[in-house]
View 1 (cartoon, rainbow, N blue to C red):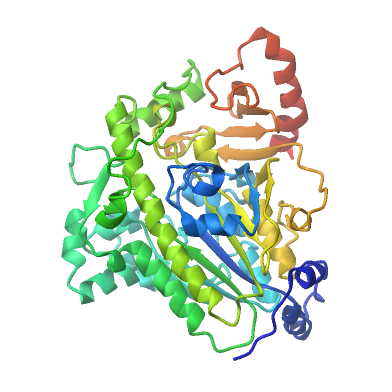
View 2: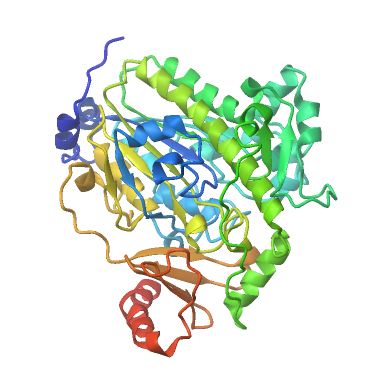
Length: 507
């Protein structure tokens, strides 16, 4: 089926027009001049684990190829360095304080205004393949609620967020439960591989003394991994389309989210690699709520006594998973290139949040240090563009605003700012400040707010009204020296508090 192509010039012109609100006919006509959108994410991908961010040890040729024909936003901050808060912000375009999804293990609200619903109203077909994590009840993870054992029955609920087509998948931890059924576990069961997979997968309740962030070898063939299943499912949907509507396809890969189930083919790339995993020095842990939070986090994750050898083994497993997903992304991009949509699709690659991967002797996410709170981000307009790098701070919700903008939709509740001016090569005034929020380990009464400018990153304990961290990102990009208690920085701290924190928490 022949479909009209869209040049970069016409994409930028069309993106400046919004279809008539409430008019399905207007939206249908308008989408003929709009791009399709392919949104590719990895879960828990730190910003420097890809080649296009300057990491010569990473093996990500397909993702790097996107950067060679797109715009790299090198300082993209997520709105909450944890799965559900970050994803809630991505789909709503709102800060955590606005949507209220401050922690995992509680369900999101299907009544929220979302970018997916906005694109549906603009005449787009929406498809999500892979992880959503919109539901988060503990009963789902532990299998104590028999009505949620077959997680495919959650699809009608998940679709209420604005999804027309859905193949929903979950973390390896979820698959471990022998009572859980998902599309992927059914795929493995039919191939006689499910028992093998579950036996190899570590779980929270196994009693395994090894930390869960260490690598765990998998004997599955490359074509049978979870990453392959997500990538193949996205390709199958793309190749099976039979309508003329524009589409928004979110290919949401689960890896490198732990447990790190590395495939031998990809692990061999890094088996002897000397990977830089950051400082082994724990961060400053003051005698206040922030210090208590960090101490609890290092205890819960078993990272406080992590050795250099363990950090290296973890990094090798992590990088191997990134390479594995890069390979699957390459196959998806190849399928797109062979499709009628090749020249009229906006492509975005990013992540929900990062991973400390041993830096500051920390693992996972849930902190505001760069490896956790920033994500890689590249945007490729239809047909590509002259590669550029934008080094000013932006936010993940700016992607939300960009999707709605180029689709010609409307989402008045979105707090993001469209990145289209940067894609046009204009001189858009950068944000003065970006924000991220964290409600504390197990939601035990903590609420921390981060404000980052081009030069400084400041963390404030909202409940106890205490300044927790202050880093000079120009002089100290590795965030080694917390200046919050330094008398010489009292004036700066007060200015950041007055100009950015107080307006944010009181708005």
